[in-house]
Image 1 (tube, rainbow, N blue to C red):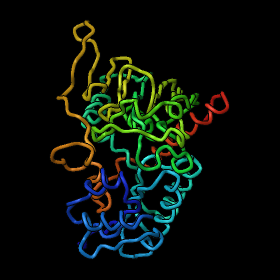
Image 2 (cartoon, rainbow, N blue to C red):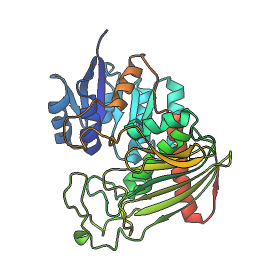
Image 3 (cartoon, one colour):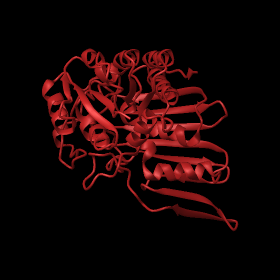
Image 4 (cartoon, rainbow, N blue to C red):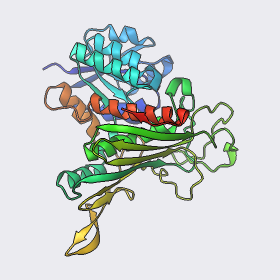
Length: 371
């Protein structure tokens, strides 16, 4: 069987931190096409990760015109996800698109329509589902140890953690700030753990309080590489924190909190730690410490138990030391080979996008958004 031929559209931070190292060395796969508006990025990626005859592009349409390419990874700013993904599906390529699915629900719907129209596979890059603690939490839930889950908290809060690279603080390219960037992760895996995507209504507020007024140079911010970092507060035009209340149709509720900059003593996002808390009729759990803490009743006594060992979540490229295999990309490649199913469906990711957008809309209008 011939090797799968994979192309990459966007060769910036997320490509080099996750997708390229995650796909490197996958059996039966050729990384053969690289596209970026900055040609040097594409050339560097091709040299480090590509086949000897890998091609380099600055126009994604030229890459998609190659009939030998089986699938592409769309790794661009959020606002471009829809246009490129739809074009790729129409060109007969399967697509792994980075999170969030799209900047708006309207764009996400276009992506779903293109998937259905073409019959090609579409998945979204929500790698937090694969983290060990979240996999353990999923097993705890699926075995019924929590009973009926009626309340959840999805949290990703950085005291000072504004991205200072790429276009994260540019609303015209990203569609928003921490809510759409990191809040999307903890919301996705909370919905995944609950296996509940049937939303009744959403109320929320996004705050633009600190990003433009802080003297960033003296905030002591440390980036994911452990280096002190600053941001340009004069060009900052997205929210710096957001809170949402999500009511499900079965009565369950989720509180979502996300921030790049907020005046809290605890920095929950210091080690790339999105976490969830679930409360059910039989017990509850949280993943705050990087492992699963179960609170339940044993011999009629309230009891706290740790489930499994403490193993930190991992994104290839973000952590030091030898890189374990990327579960996200293993599942993707198996699906491309017809040896398994997609783990993150576009339909699930669509609900996440709708909720995030509803929080933004509710913040503007002061009213709930009904689904």
